[in-house]
Image (cartoon, rainbow, N blue to C red; front, side, top):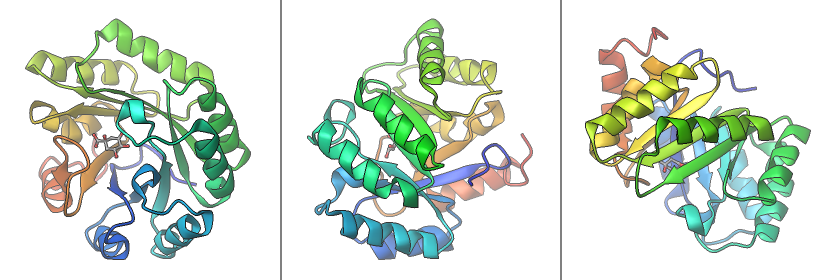
Amino acid sequence: MLKLGEKPLIAIPVNDKDFEETVNKAKEKGANIIELRIDQFRDRNINYILEKISFIKKLGLYVLATIRSKKEGGTPISDYERERIFKEIAPQVDIIDIELSSEGLREKVIKIAKENNCLALVSYHDFEKTPSKEEIQKIIDKALELGADIIKYAFNVKTKEDVARILCITNKNKDKNIVAIGMGELGRITRVSGFFFGSVITYSYIGVAFAPGQIEIEKLKDELEFYGLLKGDK
Ligand SMILES: O=C1C[C@@](O)(C(=O)O)C[C@@H](O)[C@@H]1O
């Protein structure tokens, strides 16, 4: 099983366009996790998805399965379809991502993850703002109450105070498995510095960024190296 917190983990989101080329490059460039953004796949046939998972695992990379809801930046897929896909692929993946806002489905998906020895990653995205520290703490506490193994929050950063708030609340919760992301240019710094404050995974990219402020993997690795993070120093 994936060990969190031992060293910074780099996740590369992919869809099924240029899949093998991107995943091979991710392996070559030192990524640890491939996030399958199944919501962006052109084909969501189970065997097609399982082939992708097998390709990733043969390279010794971990698989994070995400079927992002429309309201949090994904594409329109029914909860029934999302549950069906997660059920079918759970035995083969390492982490499953489900939004805190997917009420009803979230409980089922967390149960599916635990029944299949996957880590349940409960995620929260706010593309408008960075909430208050009290609101962020409520997000963390609710995710934990639901049984999350990992809590991810990705907020739109508008000010340096937003950056400070994200890092401080992450530091306050560093005993938990937190993935802290400040989205946008100003938030970019969190994608490296988050590891100093307890964040366990950062999302990078090869080719085209999946979200605002992502850092290309070679530049990210240089920055992690420069700040002594690759040695596991926190
Ligand atoms: O939730 C996240 C984080 C992310 O949005 C980012 O900001 O890097 C990228 C998404 O693919 C992933 O599911």
